[in-house]
Image (cartoon, rainbow, N blue to C red; front, side, top):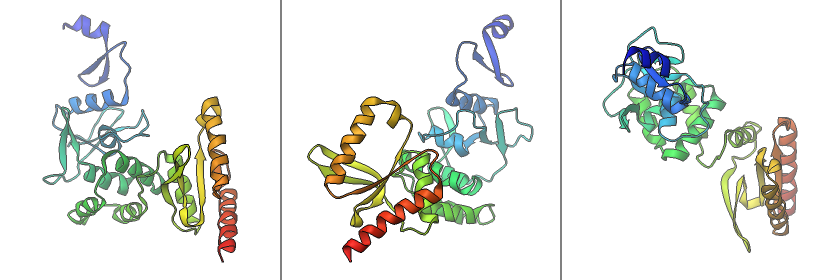
Length: 266
């Protein structure tokens, strides 16, 4: 590789780190490039670490967090001088990255609460992260900022959420004073098992978040119709939520469903 080929066939990602011109700068490649920029001495952290561990729903353009003592990172990299104790980092592939527990510790105390819970849900779903282990990390970092935010977020984590929108709906229900819903409720039918996003099995009330693919995919749309008919025949009340529904309206619909079931039970 000479300078001419480097300049004409590659593009600069971070200082002294290049990528072939035709190769997209995907999140995983930017993470690897950020680690190389640290001369292989940094530890990938935060949302970038969650992505390395397999968590979904990480923005492709998220800044790459690296625990590394450089106060002048390039654009697209965020360095932190955090204290790292033994056992808080691991190696995934060739990358040095924070463990799932340390990753959750950093996300839970730094991200806004709704975002933190959504990302922690995804991390828990991908890794089965031990929440008590996260609390143990917090115990050995008593002076870290955001510990109260972390504590609140950990109480709300549920790996059953299959998308950030499902997390946001669940948090809306909890914040609205409703009992905490169970996620991924298995319902056995003659057509096989169905899994409801969230709800209250004792009352046979469920809340389903329908993403865009539920309406744009005709086959999925037909399946949804048949599934809803089956659940209704079995006695389930299913409240379907779509993007754009106002929070107050969602809460009112769910309360009405629960109230109807409670009155019929008693």
